[in-house]
Length: 96
Image (cartoon, rainbow, N blue to C red; front, side, top):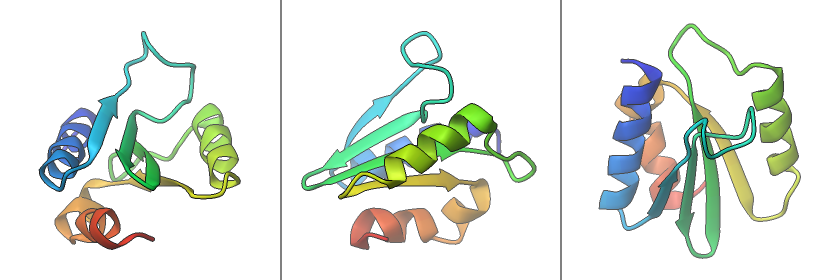
């Protein structure tokens, strides 16, 4: 599964569960900013999808670490195995 396919799968699952989904493209975001923003009040979740072999680059890691410091904001790096194992759905339904 490519990162783009994973992003679409996470977005589809989130929408099915009632989340508002914003898929951010390189043309509409600052370098390194997460690809997905998910809102289900009072929760705000940012997701950086990655394939099994790739890690966030420096700019992505910096954004994710900064977002983690904000109260009530969650950020994740999700991989295909997280989707298959049900971890993505669990977090969307129940939280971290």
